[in-house]
Length: 393
Image: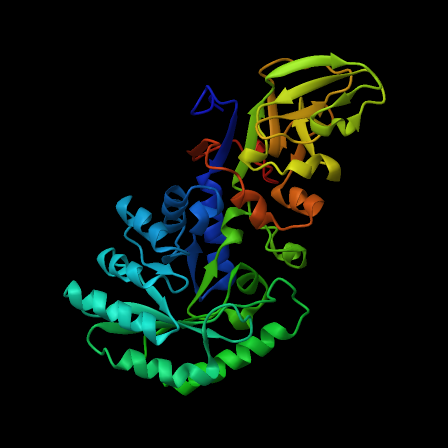
């Protein structure tokens, strides 16, 4: 590949937009006849929201989902015209931008419904589209089933200003295929929807990535596909259903300094790592301020240099980390792969976001979302598959 977009920074992210498009196309096949809406909140899970949104729509996504009004506004200002659903209620003063930028609002309280109606009236807009969220057991947000009738009455109080276009819920346990709580939630959801006597054309949705992949009963009008469109498994319970997905992100850097250290010496803050023998240490200019967790060295974190797995040694610092390269020759400027793939003498080596997650006791979502904005993103099509840990390389 070409040099990083910001040559002065020897750390960068490559994002394969073809992989995003492929994953959406694959998911469309899996969940058909349901449609796919792509979740691009949190700057596209760290991949770049505008670029991911465009690639997802190219792949056949019929709509987009965000968490914040500001995220929807960013997409609109970038020229994205697809439907955009804001997945939760926002502060009342955000209702104005929801109307101005033609976003779909989620509602579950009468106060927010009134705020939307006021914004619609002020802008002389009729039929502002809203999705009603029902809490079927996750107990995060959403109207309780026993409060549904009152909420619908609040909506019906603004018949020309607001238009109900969708009803949905969110699954709490979909990434655990053997847990029966997903079926419980879907029964509660069906009962609630049946009580509404919805007119034809209202969208009904329940499935996230895990639901769409594993639970056919959750595939309704569309699936809200988040982590899967980035080629990352929603959880190990879903891994067998993820073989058709391609990881879209690689986190790379270059060696910035090389030195020889003697056995028995210690390194980094707190001098918490002691070398057993003389060895070569490479400094890599990326650290916890960039999204590499500080304690990754304690849990067995590795990088790839020269096609070999190399352990991170010593505490990861804010802007740099240190790698034990043994007696191998390493030069300043050598490529370092933190997440992705690199070919080597023993064949291709791959480190995935899920590998970091396993080491740190978390999930792949947190890893990619945690890569800081100061790490430049390079978005491209036709990226060499080998750079991204893809099995089809």
